Length: 237
Image: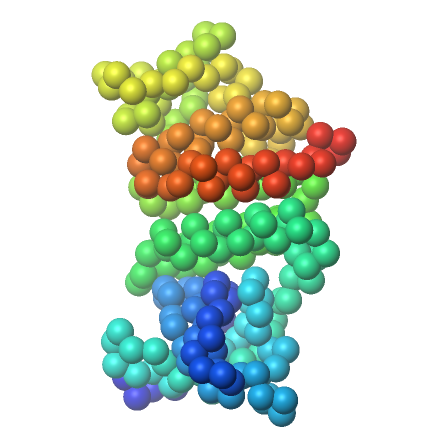
């Protein structure tokens, strides 16, 4: 692979300065994450100006170097700029959360394409939907599924059934459990269809605890994200 020119679709996950005029850009592609150096990216006459930014889907051409090294970006053409994300800070916060989670969890190799498709669909939803909290939960539950630790909420029957965190279901032997109502369980099975903000917030709390238990996510950071994403949603749901 080293020494080849590779053309692929890619989602811009992260941009960092590399020098006064250059960037390091991390992409998610159908084959996994790729790090590229964009030399002269911020020079006034650079042909990369406006061709990539966070949340963009692009077609990139890069020169592959040895494994573990940063590759050299040669060409970049935006395919989808997702301009709707720029007009609402709640959508931007949600998109940032989705990109960071994807960057941490996405697999490489054959499994990477499913993560790539999930990220594209999630960002599109964040830019189009009014139910942003539902979009967030849909993304997080789908990410858990791809990570191999998907919870099962189908067994909830009682007004407050015990959900066992270790087993990820309503039946198990673990002493670590939390009560979930049938309405919250139904929300977690179809979060984008949920309309009640209180139920959505309860469902978000469940998934936050589950993420922290299985994937070591920061609960405090996620609580802040949930508050920002949910702000103003009560008038629309």
